[in-house]
Length: 70
Image (cartoon, rainbow, N blue to C red):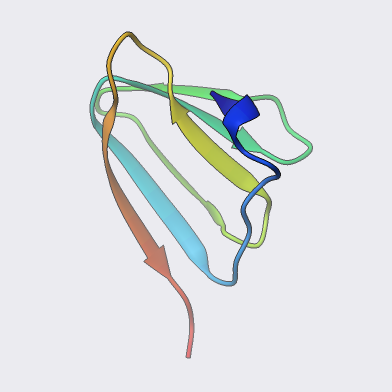
């Protein structure tokens, strides 16, 4: 759950998340949570506070790609 995080995570770069299986909730600081299901994706600036957690009965399987210039 999001409550397991002490705070949002942020770091330089960009992030792409693609849901392979299950359901995922993406929390972005200052925004409403975004619900993703199998086949959905999200791309965002990693400097924006974020956290993502499984939203279903079992863990979601995701492909995550982080990129940082330089």
